[in-house]
Length: 362
Ligand code: FAD
Ligand code: UDP
Image (tube, rainbow, N blue to C red; front, top):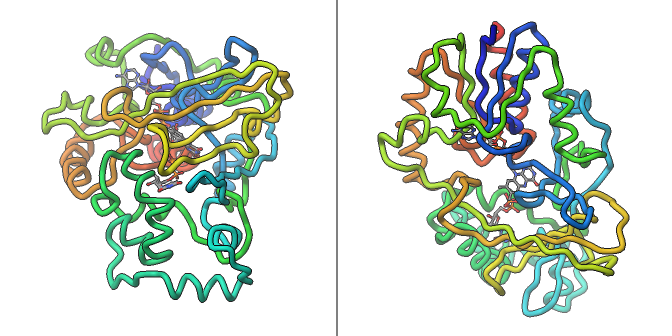
């Protein structure tokens, strides 16, 4: 007899399903998509290159608990992500570091010099409330306009001044020459890909997985003792307070035959040119050897699958009303990026799901 229904086979759903199953509970996992892994799903494209169907997913965490949990289901390939930003046709290290300054302004700053530079150009803000505040407060207007303003407009369809500080605060500013996108303690890619890792996570005698099944079609069945829901929280409540904004993307995948390498690093950002924000070349991430290469361009859009909660005052106020309903909903646990309406990275979702499982198991 199935006792727990888990809606969503992404990081949130798969983590909680595995934890409950390990503790002896029977779990039924459903997903309306035809595959597991949620937005982290990867697969071989028509040319045999491993690609991330929903945009580039780079794993990084400082949490030993999360690292240990996932390491039960995969070996890892060490990988440190690097990104370049295109400004006026030139490629610069991004996040902004000392090399970015030296190359952009034709300077020869050392670390202390870079700190002085930022001190001279920054526009101090007494209160840092928005993403505009974050960037102006740390690097000033010229770098803001070159690297952040237009990227953010494209990505969110909003002004940086309308977005909470946390969005731009994801990006550090450095006086050294560290050009890694992340500095977390653990940085690696699942050796055989995310989908293989999810297959192993869900491979348990207490777990059954049904794909192509929508929550709406099973929610009223009375055989569940508990429900874990990882889809959009507003959808669960039939949008009773109106729709929460989620930003979407269109992914344009392309394979380039007989091309060993398309670009020098995993991702190149295009803050000011094109309708897309960035291009990612998967072979950098996966280390795969292939005579061709596969890339993806990300085109932000308002409609489509929900990918990003939108961190603004208005959306967070609306989310709070849904969160109150979620708290009061008996027998249902809401967890994950869409269900908790948080701009979570993968490791944060795993951590939230591990915590939720622990609470459920008492
Ligand atoms: P999801 O992966 O969205 O899974 C939810 C699942 O629920 C989906 O499969 C969905 O089909 C299913 N579902 C929803 N509603 C229903 C329903 N009614 N019935 C049945 N099933 C339903 N994080 C990083 O750490 N590093 C990165 O580099 C990174 N890059 C990213 C790039 C992009 C373009 C995006 C969009 C996200 C990125 N993330 C990254 C974030 C990462 O994707 C998420 O943190 C993580 O995948 C969220 O897991 P989840 O289980 O909460 O949600
Ligand atoms: N950002 C920017 N320019 C860039 C990269 C990022 O302005 O070249 C801003 C933008 O607002 C973006 C946010 O920083 O949404 C967070 O960037 P990140 O790369 O973490 O976004 P994600 O990978 O989650 O899409």
